[in-house]
Structures are given as structure tokens and as C-alpha cells.
Length: 334
Image (cartoon, rainbow, N blue to C red; front, side):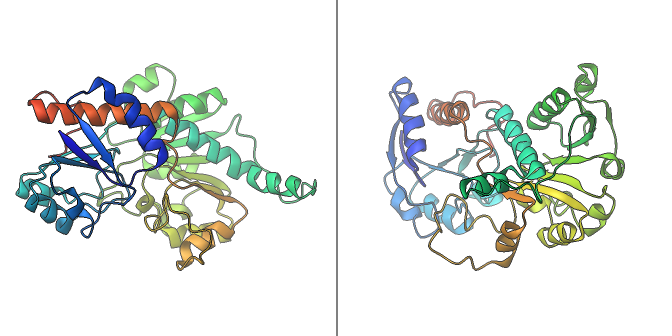
């Protein structure tokens, strides 16, 4: 099987090359070009393409790939928001993903964002580098004894519940399918509905799936129900949060700190070096301007362990397609 690997970064090539010797029937050619309708034609002569969360695997891209005889799209990410799944089905293209990779890595990053935004560590670091050792404006909240609200208690949310317990916090969970095992293990104190979680939590972290029901679940109405000075963390999907409502909540003081690894309008920025440009979008620039907001570029997953798991799962799926075997559980989209 010949795979064209789109959107290659140095760490992608390193992690996949490390695993490839175990898959002698698979060859990969790498390109830094991302997958779009205009670049899909590069896949001529290949059996499959591999893309990441910031690719465009919409209807036009899929039509071009199908016309070239490409029948497999390997998404090396957990979500498939970038893929027009219905079109892929119609064209007979199989799409796979990596359903879970190092949930602990993402949970650890969520807590790191919470700590950094809450204690203004990013601002303190910059001050000290400039020989400014004042503490004005850097005061935060002690998390010990506070209440954490975890929305979505799947693998990532569960990992964060355990971390919050380690901080000595009371943990509230909210999920359409509560995990009783987490209560039995002492990781979640109780499951509550969204409104009660908003009212009681000092720290809220989002790990819900993005769908029509969860789109903009954090909005003016839900923010109004939260405690004053709440810490809001999002390492899930950007569109879970209405960005304009978030900005209003920050300005009013309702949201005391925010840590965002994902946010609306991120796609044009994620994994790109735009240091010599003026950002054309007002939302991203406004979020970056607040001293109590920390943004990272969709990097919560980014550990060596997670990269190895991504490579292994992606290659296992490619091998399963070629040999008609079993895909990694939960990884086949269509």
C-alpha cells in the first residue's frame, strides 16, 4: 500500500518512520502540503491518503480522490469534523480515525491551562524576563477545596477527574451517559445536570462531543448561570463555546480565567507560523489581549507517547484495510 501523507511536520515523519519497519507492506511519502480540493490531485497513483484535523476533506476533495482511485482516507486524529462522511460513503471511500490517544496527555494539558490562566503564570514569566518582579495583577485562586465540573466524562474527562481529585477538589460530572464506575472509584463525587454544574463549579472543563445539541453550549445564558470568577477550560472542540459570549463573560468578570486549546476560527491559524502577519480576525486577537486568558494551538495531545499511538493506530488501520482484517476498535468512520 502506498500512502501520501499530507500536512507533514517534522514530528509526524519522525513518529511514523519509527513505526514503519513493523509494516513492511506499507510505504509512505510525505508532503508538507495540506489536503484540500486543490492539492488532492497529488494523490494520483496512491492507494490512500493520510490527513490531520486541519485538512479539508470535504465533498470536492473526496470527489477528486475518488476520481484518482483513492479508496482510503486515514485521519490521524480523533475527530472527523474535517470529513464529509456522507459523501465518503456515497463514493465508496473508507475513512478511519484514531479514536483515542493518550487521554492523560490531553487531561494534563487541560489542568496546565487551568493553572496557568488562574495563577497568571504566563504573565509572571514575561515580567521576570524583563526584570519586573512585581506581583500586581497576578493573584489567583487556590484550587484545593474547590469544585471542578467536568462536562463529558469519557476517557479524557475521566483522566481529568482523577487529576482534580489529586488536587483535593470536589468533582462534579455531567454526561448523557454517566459512568457509575467513576463514582465507585471515588473519581466523581456525583453526576448533575448542566445547570447545577454551572451553579456549583469553580472550574469547568469541556470534553463533550460536538454536535448540533452541544454547539455553543457555552453561551450568554449558560455563562450567566456560572459562579463569578469561574475558570473555564476548553480542550474539546472550539465550537462548544460561543466566542463572543465568552469575551463578554471575561469583560464582565463572570469568567475569571480561561484556558483554550481550541477555539472558533482556529483552523486558519492552527499549526501555522503567522508571526509576521496581522491577524485579520477580531475574535482571536481579542482573546489574546486578555491577561487572564491562555491560548495554545491545538497541542493538548502533543506528547511523544500520543504521537506513537497515533502512528500505530493509523498504520494498523491501513493494514486492516489492505488485508480485509479488523480495524482498531472505534476507528472506522465509514
